[in-house]
Image 1 (cartoon, helix red, strand yellow):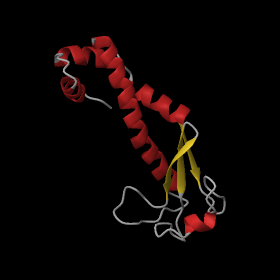
Image 2 (cartoon, helix red, strand yellow):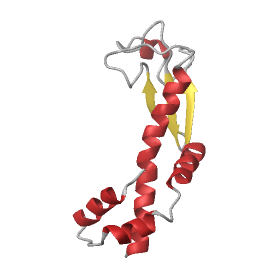
Image 3 (cartoon, helix red, strand yellow):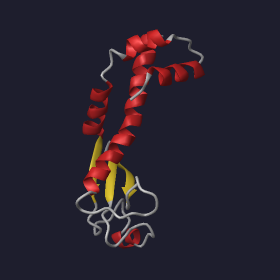
Length: 134
């Protein structure tokens, strides 16, 4: 979620001078959480990989041979607008290569998607603020 300070900094980098009050007035009219939820719901898809199906034409055997794909761990795929953007073979929120289990893989994947989608939402919100202020 964008703060008024973050927007102010981005605007200043663009050479646009607006007060924090002006920025705050526009930001307060935007439901950033709703934008984030819509992006996650409409643009993102998560799959837990079965470790047997090819991915983008690459045989499963070749993917499993990677050093970071653990025999006892789950792997999830993140799609944005139908395009695969992440093949995640371990917990991205822990140092090192930590296996994900069938019990926690979806929770981790959803957290990862929320993190990625927040960047998309922030861009959309910034554009909305920019349109209102210019």
